[in-house]
Amino acid sequence: DAGVIQSPRHEVTEMGQEVTLRCKPISGHDYLFWYRQTMMRGLELLIYFNNNVPIDDSGMPEDRFSAKMPNASFSTLKIQPSEPRDSAVYFCASSLVPRARGYGYTFGSGTRLTIV
Amino acid sequence: GDSVTQMEGPVTLSEEAFLTINCTYTATGYPSLFWYVQYPGEGLQLLLKATKADDKGSNKGFEATYRKETTSFHLEKGSVQVSDSAVYFCALSGDTGFQKLVFGTGTRLLVSP
Figure 1 (cartoon, rainbow over the protein chains, first blue to last red):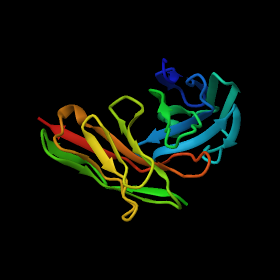
Figure 2 (cartoon, rainbow over the protein chains, first blue to last red; figure 1 turned 120 degrees about the vertical axis):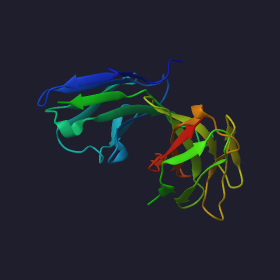
Figure 3 (cartoon, each protein chain N blue to C red; figure 1 turned 90 degrees about the horizontal axis):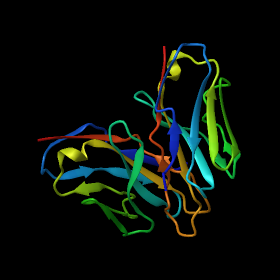
């Protein structure tokens, strides 16, 4: 399995532009998570999906952020308009609801976003 | 709600030293406990886990024992290497249905030759 695949790995964008981050979860995983990591705030859960349906978006910082999962193999996180304070590493993770406990998540390699 | 508390870093050690990174948790019931590791420029990787009291998770020379009585899951390694330099995250998930992972703030480990 190729694991969780995120693209792009790095993105540098001017303030005010739209940014789209992409994620392909592991095939068969029921859950998909978007996290943001910064030095100041650490690892923050933004939103997660179950069977392509958003379950909890309480971590999405503001209306400029939106996330979609049109099918089981693809999700996007969009920021419009982008601001310098959105600069961070964004991770996608997926998980399978197991019969046994303690399955955990598989993370992608992240997208390092810089807004200038 | 559920929470995880980790010791602040960075933890700075010389190669072959003994490592302990403390982790305590607050949760109802019997959560599953995890340690994740993040190497520079990479995503988090599952290092080890334990799903019930007194279980010991182990991987790559690292160990952690699920202590219900002290609500702890401390990470240990007998002899660290430079390649162990990374950020280590303790995490838990609840024991009913699907529970999202709750992460600690992470502890940076720096190992010098």
